[in-house]
Image 1: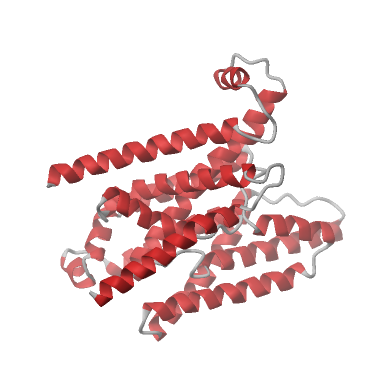
Image 2: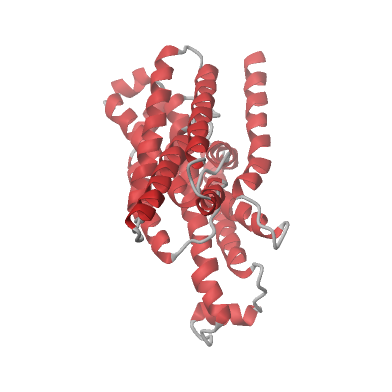
Length: 346
């Protein structure tokens, strides 16, 4: 039985790694501009002429694919942490309003800085780190409201409803802020708020990697405390787990990961909810030591596939990535809810 489970996990990891690799290559090869395979191979190996095809590949497609890989994994991992923290299968950054809170503060900062630029008459440079900090503050603000509501409500379903309401409030404030922006600013904010990996640069990829990789490492180191926490607070306390420190860590880490996604790509729906469940079914186990890396890989594959479809389904028109992730993710959420209802009925 144990060997069978080990073999299943190994096969699942092979499938996930192979899927991420293939989707990354497809994202680099497929686009609105057709590039012959020999030119792609030459550009990737450095034997190309360094012409237009190489610039498209290295300056547009590869940074975008790398961003989808990193941010998709971060979003899935954030969802897994929130589901573990709240012990709720449909908890996620988007559902609990955390992404909306991050979006609200980033929109406030963007509009304020644009107004400040007009007042000064010169451009004010906004760093990626500053945008991540703004998104983190917004995410922590929403998370604070969710935690406050979790002490007031007795059912987890009401907590989800509270998170949805917080999301609506943050979205309303964002829309109010946008009314004070100019037409050009509204277009930029609208495109960002729909969720997209377009316009990524290698500098962006470097910053998001500097945030996501250490966060992933810390989450992985928390595998054993998370396993004890999943078995019950009493068991975790008997095993010497500092529950208060663990909860704070889960809140901060999930907020950092969500903030990084929103700062660069805008709010993206359903990835944080659906991917952990799909990965758990694929692995056949919920052990954190196996789930954490698999969730990251699964989120990367999910976002790379969604981004590829968003760019190609109605080309040259590009869909928002949240449109595609909702098409795939919403049925998974409905399936989760029906499975829970069957379990309670049984």
